[in-house]
Image 1 (cartoon, rainbow, N blue to C red):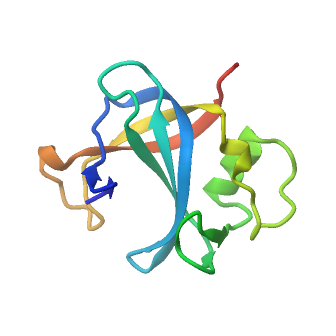
Image 2 (image 1 turned 90 degrees about the vertical axis):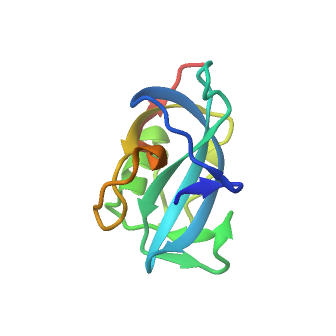
Length: 141
């Protein structure tokens, strides 16, 4: 089950939310290297301040896995495409993409509900959770 800090990921109503970057992890999930970016919900309401993840497939992790870990992304991966849209400065190397541009930005994201597990079996309603489906842009200051 998806979690951070030993807590279940919250279930938000699907839609657009304002989020801020908290941290990222380069991990191995089910034999697949993944980049997990954790965001904090900025919209006021019952989920204000809660963490929700955005999962990306990556080519590989580099060095130590886990929080703050390094990674190599594919040139046409969802991460590289979203990064280039959000931060238009050209990416010079796919194995050294800086995460600093995320820091201090208010991002607009589309959030969806996960209702099936990795085998595409239905999850019990009490285990549904939310993830960032895609990052849409940087919110105006």
